[in-house]
Image (cartoon, rainbow, N blue to C red; front, side, top):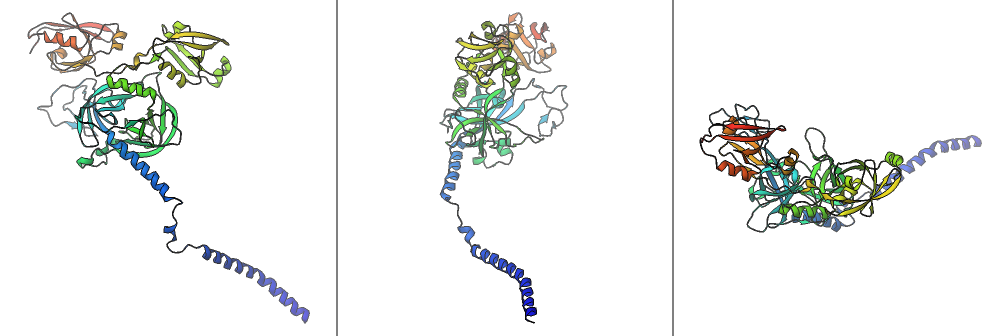
Amino acid sequence: MFASHEGSRTSLFRAVWPVAVVLLLIVGAATMTWLVRPSAGSAEAAAPPSMSTLDAVQAGFNWMADTVKPAVVFIEVEQKPQAEDMTSNEGVPDPLRDFFGRDFPFPRQPNPQIPQGGQGSGVIIDSSGYILTNNHVAGNAEKITVHLASGETYQAKLTGSDPLTDLAVVKIEPGHALPVAKLGNAANLKTGSWAMAIGFPFGGARFGGRFDEALRYEPTVTVGVISATERQLESDIQGRPFRNLIQTDAPINPGSSGGPLVNTHAEVIGINQAIFTSGPVGGNIGVGFAIPIDSNTKSVIESLKGGEPVVRGQLGVTVEPLTPALKSDYGADHGVFVNEVQADSPAARAGLKNEDVILAYGGKDVTSVDEFVTAVQNTKPGKTVEMQVLRDGKKATLKVTVEALSLGTAKKPEARAEGGKLGMAVQDLPADRASEMGIAGGVVVRSLNPRGEAARAGIQAGDVIVKIKRRPVTDVASYQAAIDELKKGDSVTIRIWRSDRMFTAQIEHLGE
């Protein structure tokens, strides 16, 4: 019996023991949960380690925006048309409107030409009214209107633009001192540093902006970081990409172009230029680019303010990075590979040849294409520089005299003559185009009155006028002088260059 009773107790213990252990674990877990459970209201009391640090960061961003925003402007432009339609809409039905609300004359002309509108941002860099923006915003503008953050509006003139940096400077005449943004230095930018972009995305007030007059032209502020430096984008000039660009994820959108990229010292360290985007909308996806403000661009800006030439050097050579394959085949461990040497260029005269590897320039090793191009462009034209090259496995030293890069000149506003006795508007023929054509100069026909004397004589938009009544026309001034001498009833011969050939347009009897 005893044995039997003891066995029963043992069996009972074995059955109950696991249950007891589970119960103890549940009670223990519940007890620990109760012990660590926060009391009511403790979430509000659990402050960050230092709220003052967060307040300081926020105050810093507020200060950056408040410091620079008054100097940021909204720019509206009318781009030069290829050939304006000088007809009147009087006596015709209401004009058609396209998807964006623009007017088209009705009935339409066979090739209607109208000015194209555009917009962007800019930043005041001189209290007298000089404004820095992009060349692609204002460089081809027929009319420039600047709206200040204060609500004031002014007409501006282009003082200079530079396609190689995509920078332009416009000038307004405010009659009083303006707020100015300080230009910084992007030379020592670090990836990951804070950055603030300021501008008028999608036109500011026209797309969700404030319409009360006092704040209508208040710019938008976005914040991000410096994502990378030394970036490159293709430009409209073949073989001349935009170099040394800043990449940022501070949101930039259409309309922000020309606005400032600002560091934590409220200094402008870049001019917003472009974005990578996708889809039909064309909005920001976090990859934006800005032109760096450094010693090189500051020199360009000063030239543009005065409409003076932007002095750059050139060698007349096309180079590419030294890839592993090129290193292996040509036996070089650094430098740039020469793809092509232009005929009668400084490089050709110095003895540089295709397939050379440029190892050093001006006593410094060449390690990248950007470095080499920047060094050449920063060389004063007329200076002779030593280049070390590798050719057929042997090193040689060449002496090259750098020439001026003509593409680097600031573009001044072109002289124009409008309408007049012949019913056409003209502008100066660019010097580089005149040189290509082998002529001393001329004026380009911008637009025509289809019922005017010039149109009836067969003259077309894009024609280049080189003589009127045998009198040479080399620019707008000589064109206007020739026109001023014409009288009603005169017969007029006009020598014209069109499609690589010359011909003579004739007017038998000049009308009013």
